[in-house]
Image (cartoon, rainbow, N blue to C red; front, side, top):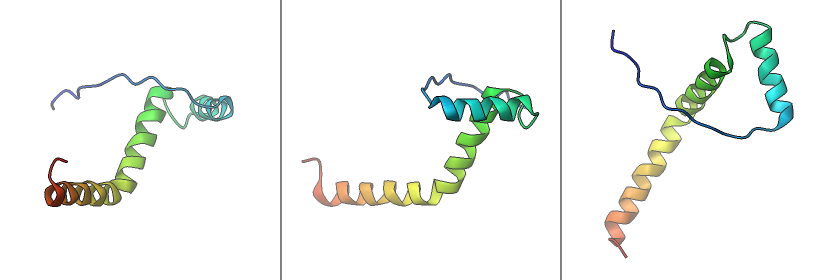
Length: 69
């Protein structure tokens, strides 16, 4: 199995959200905060993939029609 390359991301979150995240880890829903964040981001991207792709395609079409102004 190929090794997955990882990148480090640093962000600020509201204290209340961070507290909820820690509770999910402490109660065993996730191994650690890294796993929670990776899962949350993966789910967000998967649930918005079609919308994001449509937006990228429309931007490409607009650029193609107008050129590099």
